[in-house]
Image 1 (cartoon, one colour):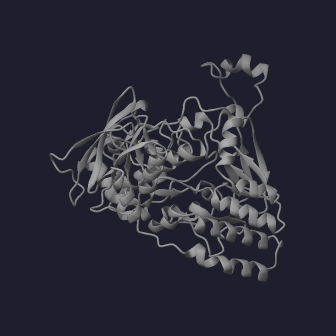
Image 2: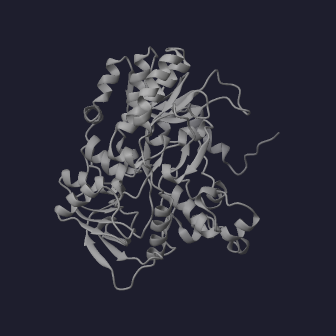
Image 3: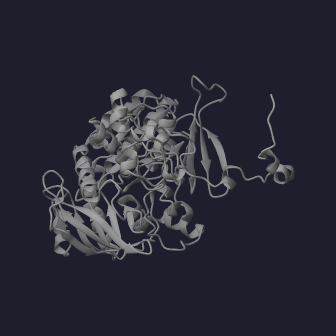
Length: 504
């Protein structure tokens, strides 16, 4: 099984299939319109054409945008598009009932289970999201979401964009937007100077794109839940706004291109060892030089194995990692012998390791501090559950529960830190931050940054929030397509009657 049909996933599938292994390659694209509206799995920001073309047209566009899919099919790979992986299951100390590891799959009509002998996870990365006043309006989106809508779906409706982040990710996003006919009003970064590829910077400036270093976004302004302009502000060395430096820029889209974060949900479910490595995009799987994880049957490749700038600028690293994973999986199944596997792998090692990662953690912190200083604490840290930064720091229950108490008002992250290390899962249960329909994709990192800042800990010391299936929100009709029996439909009110009692 190979999860993810990007550059790394298709390379892994092709390599394993050519070695004689039976391979199924699944990819959740095309994403349904309902999931896009929920910003799952990417941060699409409600900037997709409404309505999107029908499913058949979208399948054609996804296939046309990925020429490697045809090569995979020619190699004998079974390709399943429009199929998401919502769960990963294996026997453990508390479960011995499975006859082997399995994945839960689903399309827009049904869900089912598939057993596998080896699993290669090439699930890519998601955008590092951070909140600011107005970030809940249509038009705030991530670079990966924008990239998908511009290339894979050809359905981005933006007209004028402000890009947050001047690293290679932000610069490439701005260039792609320009190439797609979208006006780029500005590229903004909290750093004192522009980062990223100098040739890209020169090209953007040559087209009239303004570059704002030592700036952050103060707020997005609009009406009817649509962004119409953004307010930028200069920041000092302490990330504090400089008075009198506000700049209002007309734009209908704010694209967050600050960083990418590996999609480790499935790896977390399977018990693969994860470590926080700032230079690899945060929590990423431990793996060896053959792309083998701590779980014997699981391999990784591409952005999910760790995000590098070299992968943003080109495909070769991801492709080499995919091939390495495919070779290692084939060898572990006995399809090729060890000598052949080593010979093939040694040819790929230089390309796979040719990356110079940068320390992203300090950049995360600077962006986060600037946004908190400019926007205040009454901004949603978790948009889905409407949990503000102040409420999260105070470990307050959701307002809609109306369960405030004097005891609860006295607690907070600082008091919690005195009793032991701050645990993100415990904070999630107390505040519901991370429990919304995006399943924490838009708030995990900023929640961890808030907890680290408030408790005086390093973000690497804040445990990753745990994952539970389904790791994709699914309609009930997909999870269980059969209708309820007539008896259940007619008599269910009795089960909730005040006079109904359960004996035993």
